[in-house]
Image 1 (cartoon, protein in one colour):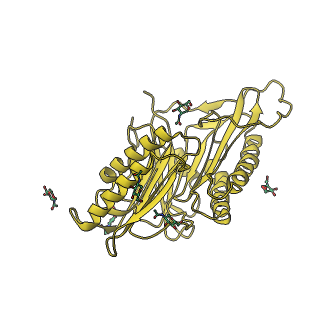
Image 2 (image 1 turned 90 degrees about the vertical axis):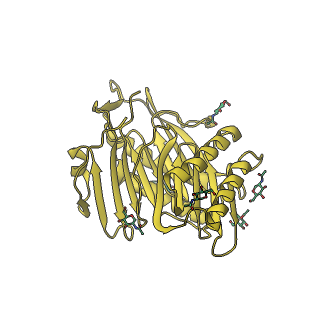
Length: 320
Ligand SMILES: *[C@@H]1O[C@H](CO)[C@@H](O)[C@H](O)[C@H]1NC(C)=O
Ligand SMILES: *[C@@H]1O[C@H](CO)[C@@H](O)[C@H](O)[C@H]1NC(C)=O
Ligand SMILES: *[C@@H]1O[C@H](CO)[C@@H](O)[C@H](O)[C@H]1NC(C)=O
Ligand SMILES: *[C@@H]1O[C@H](CO)[C@@H](O)[C@H](O)[C@H]1NC(C)=O
Ligand SMILES: *[C@@H]1O[C@H](CO)[C@@H](O)[C@H](O)[C@H]1NC(C)=O
Ligand SMILES: *[C@@H]1O[C@H](CO)[C@@H](O)[C@H](O)[C@H]1NC(C)=O
C-alpha cells in the first residue's frame, strides 16, 4: 500500500519522547511529556488503568455527543482524562477508536503522565492535572501532504480555504451549549474539485475559548499549508481540517452556489511521486519565541523553514 506523504510540525513546550508513524490508518500523532512519569505497579498506574477503562466503557453510552471527561483517585495519585470523537462519527466507531487509543496510549507512553493521542476519528487525553474546561494549545501538530500542491489558481484556493474555514469555525463555535462544538462545510472550487472543511472543539470549552482556539488554528494555515490540498491543525482543545475529498461521514445541508467556473482550467493536486513520510518537529519554549526544527526527508522542506527555526541534522524519513 502506498503511504501518504505527510509533513508534521509540532509546536510544543513539552518534551517529545517519541516520533513515530504507526501502520494504523487512523492514528495521526501522539505526545508524551516525559517531565512527569509514574512508576510501574504504582497506585497512579492503577488509577490510570481504571480511568482508561471508564472512558472506554462510557464511549458505548448513548447521548454522550462523542465526548466524556472523567477523573478519579486522591491527591497525589489523581488522574484526569477525556475523549473526543469527531462530530460525524457514530457510537460504534467512536467506541472502537477510544478503545484502540487507550491500548495504544500505554504502548506509546508507558510511564508518562501527560499524554495526548490524535486519531482521525478521536482524541484521547489524560494528565495528572485537572484540565477540563481549559483551553489548551500545547502541543500543536500540523499535518499536511508534503508532496502535493494545488496546481491551478492556488491563490484563489488559499482564499477559499480562509473564508470557508472562517465560516466553519463560526458554525462550530455557535453550537448550542451541551451540544457538539463541531461543524463541517462543503464548497465548490472548480468543476472537478470541492473543498471540505471541519472544525471542532472539546465541548467542555466555553464558546469564546472554542472560538479563540479555532481562530488560532486557522490563522496557522497560511504559513504552514499554503496551496496544500489538505491540512490539519491539531491541538488538545480543538482541531481544524480541510481536504479536497470528502473525509467526513455526513452531508452538509447546502453547498454554496458555485461561482462561474473558469474556462479551460483543470485543477488537481500535483504529486511529486515520492513515497515517504516527512516529519518536521518544532519544539517551542514558549510558543513562537524559539523553535527547533528536525527535518526528516527532503531538502525542499528545509528551504521552506522559517527564519526563526534552527535546522538540525536530517535523518532518512522513509517509511511505509
Ligand atoms: C526527556 O526526553 C528528552 C528527549 O528525549 C531527554 O533529553 C530528557 O533527558 C528526558 N527527560 C527526562 C526527565 O527523562
Ligand atoms: C508489576 O507487577 C507484575 C504482576 O504483579 C509483576 O510481574 C511485575 O514484575 C511488576 N513490575 C514492576 C516494575 O514492579
Ligand atoms: C462511566 O464512567 C464513570 C466514571 O466517570 C463510571 O463510574 C461509570 O461506570 C461509567 N459508565 C459506564 C456505562 O461505563
Ligand atoms: C467533567 O468536567 C467538568 C468541567 O468541565 C466537571 O464539572 C465534571 O465534574 C467532569 N466530569 C467528571 C465525570 O469528572
Ligand atoms: C459512516 O456512516 C455509515 C453509514 O451510516 C456507517 O456504517 C459508518 O460506520 C460510519 N462511519 C463512521 C466513521 O462513523
Ligand atoms: C470571518 O467570520 C467573521 C464572523 O462570521 C466575519 O465577520 C468575517 O468577515 C470573516 N472573515 C473572512 C476573511 O471571511
